[in-house]
Length: 305
Image 1 (cartoon, rainbow, N blue to C red):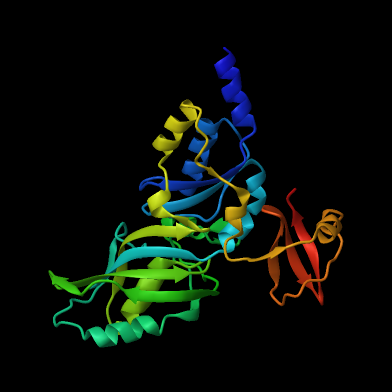
Image 2 (cartoon, rainbow, N blue to C red):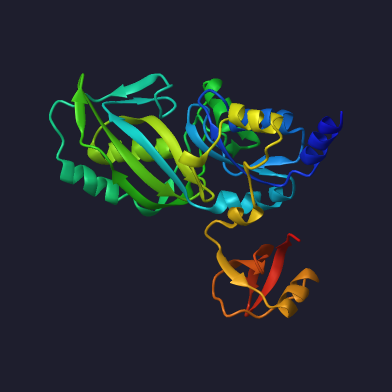
């Protein structure tokens, strides 16, 4: 009985970030729902949606760490996948119905392919796919798509920090395939990036495979499945919970004096020798607050302890 109450107490005091390996066939929402049951806590959020078919890192915030979700979402994400040239689909990935076919009859010039890839780096404009959760007039685009309706989709600017081909181009059944790695900002659709690359090369294309290998500073090789987390919880091991500090991602870190920390706790402006828009402010080794620049001073945007 005592062991059970100790477990319950541990569950109630859960705070931290989980490096979840989301498996294919479940939505990000499904993963959060299942984790709520496993952990016995309602205060859970995720740091960046993954399509149901995509495997990979899904950062999960628990307890006090849920206040870090927006910053976890902001950090760049890394994906590895495969692009197929030769046909496009309704969903821009392998799960959709074929829309257009452009047989690849001759080998491609790899130099031209790499130049086309390079042209899609930096800030680019994307139009979200019809099969996506982007909302237009209060409805998700995939709801229009399933009803057979086409609507005007809003353009969005995203940033592709790096985009490279990671394999030779292979040919089979009048199709061309190659693997890639991309680091990008939040809101980027890799499916759409694959289609846009195909267009630049003069072929209908789709994303035939995708894995998210990194997000919010968490790596795929260190991630745990729902089953592995459930086993650890059952054994009373909570070592899968990472400290809040990991959720600061790419934010510049500043270390405050005791006087500055006191001012921040009271929500007051402080002076820092920084020029960036936002910083993660530490008191010793602990994350105290996220500060945002206001003119020449920094104001607490979120105080965490």
